Length: 438
Image (cartoon, rainbow, N blue to C red):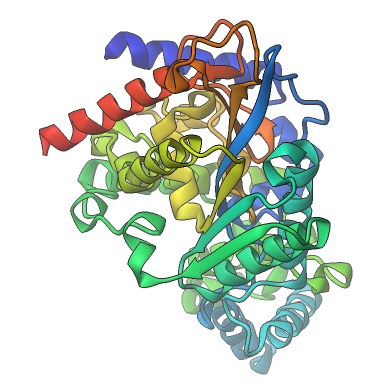
């Protein structure tokens, strides 16, 4: 097990080494510092690796996060407004402070009555993703192919699903589409494992995070730009809380139409944004990733989803016609599922919070708004000389993370393609071993 963990860390470091480091990427594009508030950037890979000779796509299995949304809680806007308004009434706001107050009020008005809802950009993201799926794998969506779509019962997820389906039907009105959003499916679409969740921020994880915060969080410069008196904000403002709220407000702007009118990023330096991102990146790793400080088991919260992906694939591969299964949920499923699958080495275990980003573990690469995992299944064409006649032996799979080809911790003669038999054997054993240990 130690050898595997070391190999995966090296793999992730190699992948990260081929790309820019998170610090370099954020310096080039500060929007990436938004963590899970990053608006979907679209695929970075224009040309996909051709299918093995004689193979064609027959099935697509998908799990996607809802598209761009507004903040979920009223306090996400109101806290900053309350703190700045009180200071303004006492003559304690600088010109920059009054400017920020005005911007946040405008953001709140835009989101009024729409907390947690899908934005226009979020709807467009899923229409575009659906169109690219159709264009990349037309065989899967040809003629009267079946599309089975499921969503969690949250409206932003339902609307994300509906926008994707509308685009597919527009492209091919003959598709046979079934769509649903029901508590019946929530056991795998949004599994809530209270036993594992209790261990998310266990004492070692909490201690490590709080120590990181003490060592790195520096809100003083931003506070001094907002308030006239240091004595005032030291006494009357929870500076760290306000600092984090402002950081999240700056990040969420990119997800709605108000992004064309204002920005809060001028409140921060690039170094401050990187520090804030690195701290939150560490939090997501600790709470939902393969964090060794809490046993590294949080990715198993998505074991029901992975079992569903495998069982649905087996059922669909037994059919003669192409089809697809589309699922729409949340980043708190996409992130641990990515780690559970070990995609691109994201199951790498790192105890030192300062090394997480340096190892290339960057949350914005995993779960921006509209994040998605796509598993595409290929079968030999009729009379293909490579066919053995055994479905599991013949079928090949390819995984894409946010529409970019990804690696799996499996042996392959033709990456990024893997044998379905190897995929099933590896992950079913992984899940069975976990269940047997409980």
